[in-house]
Image (tube, rainbow, N blue to C red):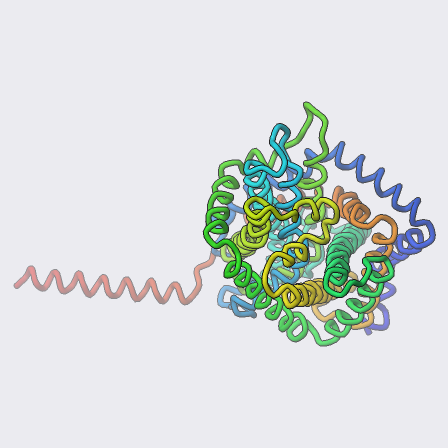
Length: 525
């Protein structure tokens, strides 16, 4: 019945229609479409950058406080419920859905971009000081801030879905504050879907740009829009096939494969790279990250000219916010049975630590090559950011093999991210169904590919960044409301003690009574 009537759901109709219109406009008027996106991007970053920074910083403080509070023991499900997925599988799924494509894209590109063009005025580009700043800021951008956004959305949805047996819609997460007016709920869910599609399109576009650049390096295939469109078509077919296998097959197995391949690449770089330099860089960058965390988190440039913060920090936060409905809902879906404390620690610590290790190893290898060996990786990145990883391979052994493996890794990350997105978008547009119809998955899979292609056609990387940033602005307000909604529902939640813990306490008490009895008997004698 649901499969026959999904199109009657206003959330599906409105969001699909808006995305469809954007696809048509971008295809028919690409230049005008790109120009409008650029103007909206400039206005948003200039006028609301402060809002993005304050919201993300507030989320971090809130989640850390929640993890160490008494509410951290509450389980996302029944008190005796246990996680559906083993720890390694859970982490692999987080990587695949959360930031795998972006990290592969920026793992070398970001530190080398900051190295060749220092983020702070007065620092000499391509210097040791620039290299240190580059690594510190890269750690910051891929640290806990991104995952605090994913974590809040995922936590609220998981709590309501598995603890309170409600649906996993964004409107339901906001309901404790905004109420249950069906028109308002429909509008919130429609916007969440549109923002998610824009965020996912950015990720797909970044992966496609990097794959196309890799093919040019490996096989001399020119990096043109036609090649990029062909990659999108192949990826679309692959993730639609994966989507047809369900959450416990395609995404699960590919998630494990992605994580294993990423770890293998990390190990390869460490073995053949400058080991001591990598370890020194990781340690120093962690120190810089911790020491300067507040300054980095709230940095703006009101007293002088400059757009670095807008192009990097604010873009990252906007991109993350834009697709947080998808990542949050997916993280919630795979985190059933974990405690709030375990969820927050797992989401906010483990992926960021791996990300920092990745950046220190891959980015550190590239920095060492330019600093010590006189290579020109930074200049190549400055000319074409998509070439960062593959240019680094040119100065390492097994260049051809590693290039092919990197393309495979990007390809599978694209499939799992898009596969996960089709599931979540289908769920969001079928009233939170945990088993959405295949037809809805197919429609969203095609629309995601189409909007990614249009954005690449209209303006490449700049258009992708604009789409994420503009669509994320209203969702910042949703995040604030969501925070207060979670506080409100948690205050009403009784802090229960699990039967297993009661039995353990009873056993300890019995042992204590026996000990006291033996002590009294000894004194009597």
